Amino acid sequence: MTETEPSSRLVMSSPQSTNCSMKAQATSSLKKKYFYSQLFLFLLLQLLFTLSLLSYWYLFPLSVQKPCLPAQVAPSITPVLTILLWTWPFNQRVSLQGLRCSGPWTKEANCRITLNRIWYKRAHVVIIHHRDVSSRPSMQLPSEPRPAGQRWVWFSLESPSHLNNLAAMDGLFNLTMTYRSDSDIFTPYGWLKPREGPKNSSLARPPYPKTKLVAWVVSNWKEDSKRVTYFRMLQLYLSVDIYGKNHKPLSTKDQLSVLSEYKFYLAFENSLHQDYITEKLWNNALAAWAVPIVYGPPRHNYERFLPSDAFIHVSDFTSPEELAIYLMILNKDEKRYLAYFQWREHLEVVTRSGWYQEFCKACRILQQPPTYRTLPMLSRWFS
Ligand SMILES: *[C@@H]1O[C@H](CO)[C@@H](O)[C@H](O)[C@H]1NC(C)=O
Ligand SMILES: *[C@@H]1O[C@H](CO)[C@@H](O)[C@H](O)[C@H]1NC(C)=O
Image (cartoon, rainbow, N blue to C red; front, top):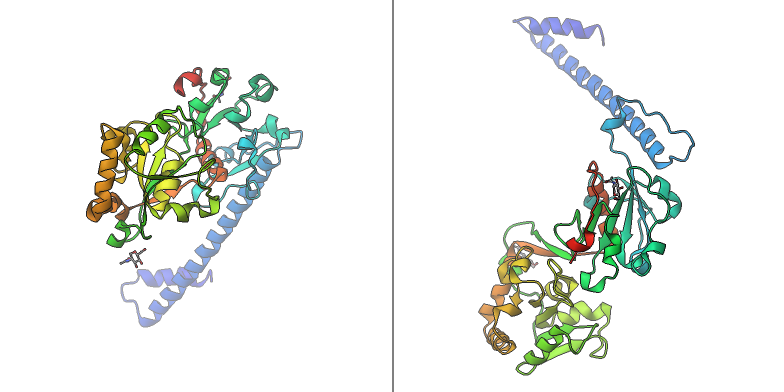
């Protein structure tokens, strides 16, 4: 092999190359290819070996002495990040899939997520779910001194109207993780993504027959609340089917199929706050192909997340009566009703699939190098 190579090189440089020399040239380039592929494989194996060694060190930093990482290798490797979940949100346990984030959601993410507080001293990040520490913050927040460089993430999908003791969180946290789009880790209840493939006009109409008019699922019924007051007035002109506690029963299993029989859905939020747009819109209305009638933050806030013709906002009308009249017009005019589905030709609805997804999103974002900061007035920001 080593002998043929130089000779073939000689032949190559000669202007009168023969058939024979071309053959030699071909074999030599084959051999060269073979050599480089072997070299590449060797380097790849070396790299893999180094990586696994390094991740072993980061994963099991239990030995008393810290391993000395070779100075020229360490900075170029993204370390495994240890994330301590201070509690299960609302005590709802979820599978952490072997405590490792994987899949397209966490492209390049590499975290070890644990609930075991024994890791507190070594955790790079602690995610703290507000509702689980808000009844007695001084007792429920970590009490041991914070290790140098450890970041605390303040996590809530609830609106400030349903949170207590917000001021107790001031000056403690480094990042926010909420439904607000200006959070460090934005964890919305749902979103739209561009649809793959060519435009398909059959996607611009509901795939189910729509035999009923308006539905509302409500568990937290407060007679004197603004949304119930609005509903009472609407109901004078239009019949609305109400599901939930103290109303028509509806199991989680049947919810989607039942709601998809309706043309409209009342996506009325329980409190009005910037970006507070919940599963009422994403799961109950949009996933069921019911046109959402929204009651929540102003229209322009919804339009940051949805096309303007994807929903009806109560503020589009001067009174519940006017809204009722408009809905009855749409009920009779299929063309106008279907205009609310035009956007589905190129966009599709994604709903949240559980805590796991959010923790993995956190993993991906937290792996970017930390910028040191404290949120002095978290309670003022989250209002
Ligand atoms: C359009 O979408 C419908 C429903 O999903 C599907 O059955 C049909 O094959 C699609 N047509 C094209 C051209 O992609
Ligand atoms: C996080 O916030 C704490 C509390 O204010 C602060 O002491 C610490 O330096 C911050 N850490 C980072 C990494 O910003």
